Length: 388
Ligand SMILES: NC(=O)c1ccc[n+]([C@@H]2O[C@H](COP(=O)([O-])OP(=O)(O)OC[C@H]3O[C@@H](n4cnc5c(N)ncnc54)[C@H](O)[C@@H]3O)[C@@H](O)[C@H]2O)c1
Image 1: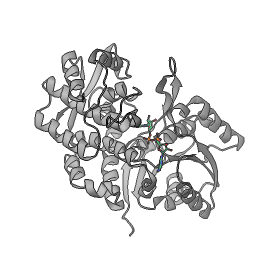
Image 2 (image 1 turned 90 degrees about the horizontal axis):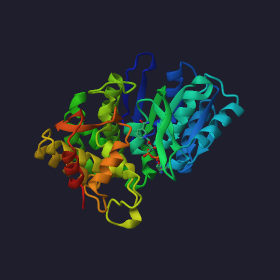
Image 3 (image 1 turned 180 degrees about the vertical axis):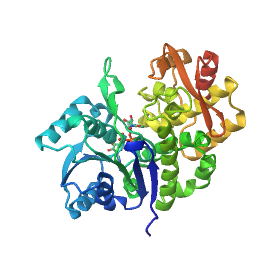
Image 4 (image 1 turned 90 degrees about the vertical axis):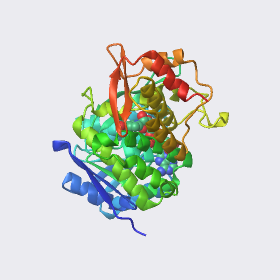
């Protein structure tokens, strides 16, 4: 069965682009590239996640070759340790060795790590070359591939990493989402990607999509068996939310209502996702949490904080909790450190401005707002709500 394609435009003036979503869209990669670049390039660099099944990268290579585009493949290791200046330097050296010109596109095929790193290379090589995103995880399809944030991690104290500490805004010229690439994605990663969909549902009304949460809950069975048509609709609705917010605040400069809303749940998530012993299901073998699992817990902690601070109501929180657990995501976690330690970890987050922690909290169905100076007891109540 062929699935109808969806196309979501991202309106950013001269940096506008389309997100094309469907089953088999990698086969149309050259058509999308030629239209986005107003011409067919002779060559393209394919920065490819080495963890992908050969079939996915072969599909992209075959479609480029059939259109007469020579694909120069560069394999990337998709781990946070390798989302590094070293791997970036290797990719830049590869571009230079092949004398890539300013008109020749760099295509990222992989999850958010490959997209962020390859995007940063595209932003900086010769001060910028065209960039095409082909995301292959649910998280990168609904979130990371749209909006133009690129970057790598820096080494931090000890063995820690300073995540996304260097980077650039560099919008892609097109995003090509082939839902067939999700066939090989492990179940746990797929469910982790759904956490960002729950986040989008919690801010849907800010983008004129109040029914996304209900729609997701009603279609969850088809989503979990990865039905291509349902995935196409799910991804299109989520991309539309991300695009709407990015269109309002491309470089995250607004205090209220802008890109900061996309950090809902993330300040809590960042405080726990690097703790090595936390597990989503009490099985120590499943530690640490994946980013999406930490986001699911962070969304619930933010909701409980909001209730304790008098901004959200219990039915609203119950609805979020129900959606998170039907997605198969954790709603409680064992072994959380004491709240004082968690508060200290939150204070290190990038969202601290002028020494004040800024939190995004849900305030009504589909709505959230930015708060500075949330009382500590309310934040503690948020953490306590997700303790197993
Ligand atoms: N730029 C942004 O706006 C933005 C937004 C959110 C997250 N991010 C970044 O995204 C990164 C996380 O990305 P992610 O969750 O997409 O995953 P990832 O890139 O970390 O990949 C996770 C694993 O999945 C494998 N994989 C990818 N696609 C696969 C497929 N189709 N089949 C089988 N295996 C596959 C990879 O090889 C890797 O082992 C983080 O570094 C985060 O900082 C960026």
